[in-house]
Image (cartoon, rainbow, N blue to C red):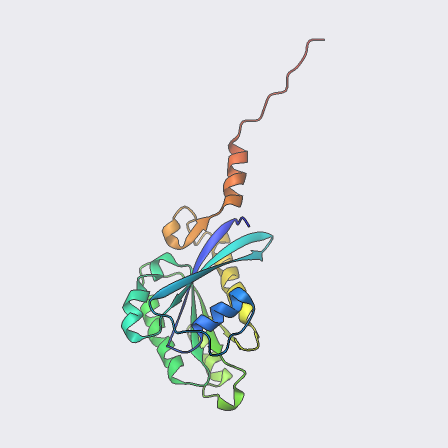
Length: 211
C-alpha cells in the first residue's frame, strides 16, 4: 500500500516494561505471552495507519532497555519525530527511569518531539505500584500525553500510536517540522510524489480547428 508520509517513532523505557510486546500487539493485533524475547540493540517495524484521509506509514523503533544500550539509543533521537516512553505500573522504579530519559531527550539540539507516556500492564491492578494519579501528575508537570494500556487485553494500544501520529501531523500543519529534511524523521511517500508529478506535468493544449 502506498503512503503519503512516513513518521519515525522510537520506544524507550526500562527493560521488561513491555516495549516489544506493545509494538508486536500494535503490528499484529495479538498477544503472545512468554514468547516475546527482550530486544538487544534496536529493531523496527512498519505499519500504515489512516489519519485525516491520509495513509501514514509509521516506522517504529524498538530499543533495548539495558542501561549499557542507552547511549546507543540516544543517537536515534535526531532522526525521529515521536518518542513513546513506556513504564510498568507494577514497578515504580520504571517510572523513575522515564525521568532520566526525559532529561536526555530535552538535551537534544532538535528537541521538538511528540512525547507520549505509556503505563503498561493495567490489567494487573492488584500488583499496581504506580497510581494513575501519580502518572497523570508526572505527565502534566512535563507537558506530555499519557495513556495506560494493557498489551494483554489490547486496551488503548492502538490509541498510543494514533495519538503520537496525530500530534506529529499537527506539528507539520503548524509548520514546526521541515518536510524537506528527511533527517527530521519524516519521509515523503509515493502518494505525495505522484501528486507533485501530476502538478508539474504541462497541460496539453487543445487543438483548435478552423471554422
